[in-house]
Amino acid sequence: MAERRVGTVSRGIRCPIIREGDDLIQIVTDSVIEAAQAEGFELHDRDVISMTESIVARSQGNYCTVNDIAADVRTKLGGGTVGVIFPILSRNRFAICLKGIAMGCKKIVLMLSYPSDEVGNELVSLDRVDEAGINPYSDVLTLERYRELFGYTKHEFTGVDYVEYYSDIIREEGCDVEIIFANQAKAILDYTKNVINCDIHTRARTKRLLLAAGAEKVYGLDGIMNEPVDGSGFNEKYGLLGSNKATEGQVKLFPRDCRDIVDGVQKVILERTGKHVEVMVYGDGAFKDPKGKIWELADPVVSPAFTKGLMGTPNEVKIKYLADNDFADLSGEALKEAISKSIKEKDANLVGQMVSEGTTPRQLTDLIGSLCDLTSGSGDKGTPVVLVQGYFDNYTNK
Image 1 (cartoon, rainbow, N blue to C red):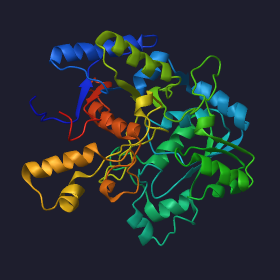
Image 2 (image 1 turned 45 degrees about the horizontal axis):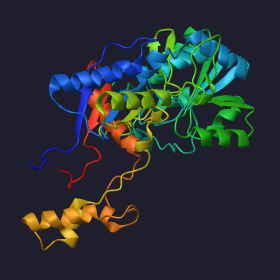
Image 3 (image 1 turned 60 degrees about the vertical axis):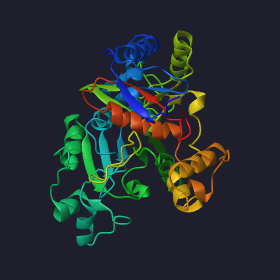
Image 4 (image 1 turned 90 degrees about the vertical axis):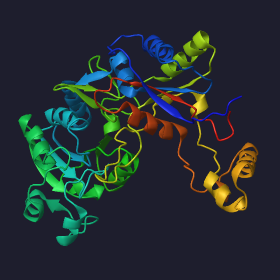
């Protein structure tokens, strides 16, 4: 048998435009199988078929309107003065949610973290904060003080001054707004005891700190639109987290109940090809841009659903460690055979062993989801399904 010369391959699979009510299992399986036939490749056991969360949510019709958000906010927080704290700076992710929140309040005290939001979008550079002699861990800035120190600053990639942008959104809905800048959650309680904390990955801690400091009503974004409002879409686990702007008045929510879809794709592929593939739904990857300092994960998780074979973390040895240490005196075919033998005989759990140092101890779904997010892109590639082959192979597979 000829030796394989290719390892992991990631392919974007073109699909029809998905609409509400479409049979996603049928469309995904057809698209993958037709791509294999057209491009001349075969499916294998443990290939991974991944689909973007957006096509899952669209097929489910999991949408709500800004009016739905307003009604939910009004019911849960009373419709008076509400603190809205730690939102990310995003036209796509948060601005539409803010519009709905503003429609459900008389006044919003908007508290922005600085110098950047949770995922790394800068309001102002850390260098400028240092130069101003400000301690972002303790200092609370009013809007006037912030402007005095830093003026009007526009985001490097969007060209938007988010302080002004978010203020305008709130005022356009007939809601009063006051803006402060702080990184301690409890700072908002000097202004109001009713709070929506909009942070994503630190939300549980923020809520705990607020309640311990005397807050009366605290809802994370995961607590808004976590049940239907007049027949709307919803997400019982994540609420508005993971949502995206659909239209000027409508939000596409993170998909719900996706396990049946991933299991269904796995089942149909097995029936049609005889191959046991793994299947997952993915949103944002989990990687950071070193130039813009933006961490990609604005979704609450990379993968809201996946088949059982994608549970866990990699269990890999570091080939360069073996080459430089255990087998430093070998080369050529002898080195290849020694490393192959080590891989075949590796322990079932390498945690803590030097031979695994430098491998990536992240969840498989986070790693594969990041690969898929980079493959599908966020624009006009038209490949909302990604087929990853050879991910679970190693140096010894022929």
